Image (cartoon, rainbow, N blue to C red; front, top):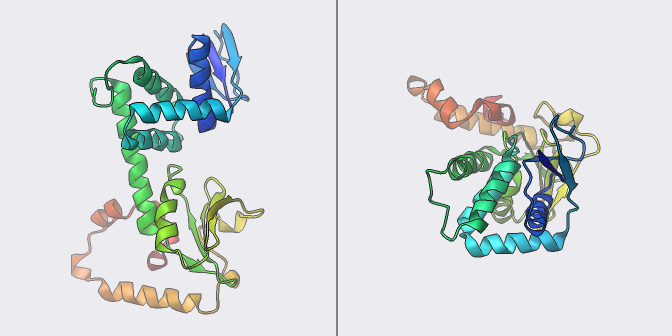
Amino acid sequence: MFVFRYDKTFEGLLTAVFDAYSRKTFPDTLLSEAEPAPMFMEQEYRVVTETGKSTRVWMALNKKLSREVCGMLMHVWLSELPKSDELLLRYMRKVFDSPHSVTTNFTDDDVVQVEKIARKVSRERMHLIQFVRFIKAADDIFFAPVSPIYNALPLTLHYFTDRFADQKWLIYDIRRRYGYFYDLNTAEEVTLNDDTHLLGGKLDEKLMAQDEKLFQDMWKTYFQALTIKERLNPKLQRQHMPRRFWKFLPEKS
């Protein structure tokens, strides 16, 4: 078994693709630096991530694939599913090695899996857009904790920077312990030194703006006023509003 070890970044994966074609040897499996070697490993190669190599591979993919399909590859990477990097490696090899387009070859299981996973991540992106609820903090920054199944937060940045361009905000993924802070100009990735108080999905009331609790109460009243008890359908509600988001919604608290 031939093993490639890399830093588990998307740029590292693209560098691995470049090195595999340069060496004319392709790995049977991809491992991080810390993962134990498989029992029947015969040889291993350590990939050193290089921007030049990863950029060349990405540009080559963009020439052979549509913008939509390249987006699907990024969605699969952000899924963080086990062996998704090996799925992407196989898919990229087929793209480069085939004289014809492979993107519509739905008899190929890898093609089917890429599209299926990409749809799931895209659905999670839409859930984030729908169910993010900002809380106004005492420093006038609007804060929203989230905890998506897939790492879909980067896919929402264009929407939030456009929709809420006139206010400072921080959206924080408490599952992966990172977020994006928008300062009225750009959104930058940040981590909090102490985020343990956010694990319950709530911002401490002591950190809220003075009028935030009032606005939350008004929103709950509005939500209740629109509710028609005779038409309640909990099963359908859970289908369209997954229960994992409820702890972040004032109207469901």
